[in-house]
Image (cartoon, helix red, strand yellow):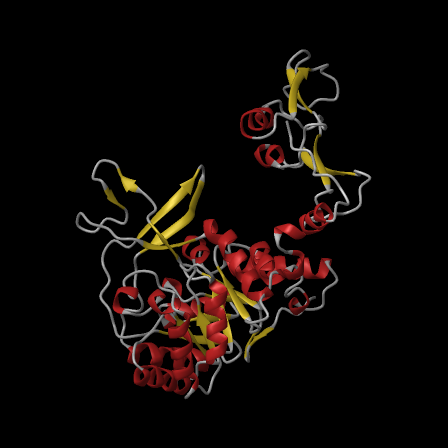
Amino acid sequence: MADLSINLAGIKSPNPFWVASAPPSNTAYQCHRAFEAGWGGVVWKTIGDPIVNVSSRYSAIHSGTSRMVGFNNIELISDRSPETNFREIRDCKRAWPDRALVASLMTDTREHWHDYLKRSADAGADGVELNFGCPHGMCERGMGSAVGQNPEVIETIVSWVMEVAEIPVIVKLTPNITSIVHAARAARKGGANAISLINTINSITQVNLETFCPEPYVAGKSTHGGYCGPAVKPIALNMVHECAADPGVGIPISGIGGISNWRDAAEFIALGSTGVQVCTAIMHYGFRIVEDMIDGLSAYLDGKGMASVNELCGRAVHSINKWETLNLNYKRVASIDYDTCIGCNLCYIACEDGAHQAIDLVPSTGRGLGPGRLPGKPVPQINEEHCVGCNLCSIVCPVEACLTMVDRDTGKPPMSWQQYQERLANGEMAPIPAHP
């Protein structure tokens, strides 16, 4: 069985699955429940000067039968006193010495950062996470994403923290920024031991068209909130890769953003995360989802012949490059398995109206076709001459593996856009003809 244990900048845990700093990590009771379920670590809900929250706090985007595809919140950091939080961290760490317990912090002055760092270490925390990502409520007070959007401020505050840090320091970055790489570089320059990303994305999920007030509804008013859940995963993966691939960052990454199962976690790890943090999926399904995550990742690593989860870390980083490095002579076309085709013709509609008109409808013979197909009924047929391999038809097809993309040998050597431009400039080739 593969070894799932990780070491994130000196913070060790028996598996890469941590509870993110959020409502599920608000109390000792929840921390105990998380560890009992099997989570490898908990990042405590952000500690700072106690705040007052509003009622109501959440809204969501649903898609078909899928609930909480996107999740929005306007909840702030912990509304409990630092004394209570640090006492409970101490109690939890004593009860679970083999698990990672990280204190998330947010404050303002140099003196306050020093104080909170020392109190975290005294409480037995394995590390601290500096919350530079909260996009609402706290940023209006000069904290949260107001810090994370300014690399110079990030470097300054991290350097303050490192003056007294005796335990590893993780910097949590905001995605509400033009380039997260500059923020990550600043964190490293300030001395951070690791970074975590992404925090939530600024959002308004919906507007009630009767009251003309977005949700969550607070006495006739609302505000922008922090967006998370499965919908943000592609954005998070991209930003994790940007940081993992950048030599100016070069410190470990804790991946966050829409992770709901072992596959999601494996993708983050393959793109450079040492481990991952989970929030929304816990709020949706509870702490016990980690059981399937552990079993699934273990089985995947065993199937790949990997002895440790660390062998997966970063395996996909170098497969992602700039567009101009891609092979212009590579060819893919769509292929239909008529034994499973149900005759919905969604592929034809999508290609005809939204792509390249490379699917024709032809009369069916009724032979070798999937259920519900009748002789004479039009069936889709790929026109390979016109097919550009865009993948749209395979994406809209409702039947798994019915419509797939297959390679075609063009007989041409690989050629990138860069090489194409060089050959044009040198007169080695004529311009590629444009489509009529």
